[in-house]
Image (cartoon, rainbow, N blue to C red; front, side, top):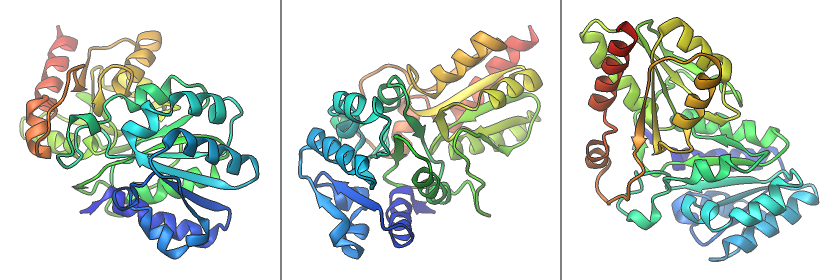
Length: 311
């Protein structure tokens, strides 16, 4: 297992070696976001903006307008909530090539506390037109995503998780923006997950298999644009869907999937995630249990949607 933030920091250095237009902006949190690796290797392309996230977005917009590829990194709560206006007006509206990196996403932020838990960052960025949103499942997919967003011309919001999580892609990944990937096959129900919750969904798959339930597990690492075809196909072929995300169930992956199914192919669905509640600090396992996001919770949700489709 490798921490996703570690994979990001190292992938950014590799990218910087290949592309001299890549610049990195930091809001005094480089040791946490791991952009310090880039700063050490390319100090001339590293800009320390201090605790001034709104200004940092403006600087990034100017750099992008001049042909650079700025990667802007901070805690997700600061780089989405605090900068929403600047992102919308200075980056999204002109469609500038700025890559926004939100670290310490969702519940799992190493006991830094509820004020640092970004449980609405996807919904904030998703509501702004023109922004791609990516939530990698593991370290390998993060490496692939860094290269992909650097090649993509336009604004991107990339989530970065703090801690080590089980690997999903042990033999490499075929990451493409806007495309989901099946990580487990099954026909009884579909689990559509994003980010680190994909590894939790795989645990649920293993438990369900012991009960002779075959669940398809789909890693939806691109939240926007959502792979609508994969969602509709899953609904048609399995007839029941559970979503799993490290985010509020309102405005994130679960909402996006519900929107697609509601307009195209309604089936029984249940959302696993943070249920519009204030959060507390704790270990990752404690938080999974407390907020109903564990593998056992996913298993129970799958059984419920299967029962609904069979009635």
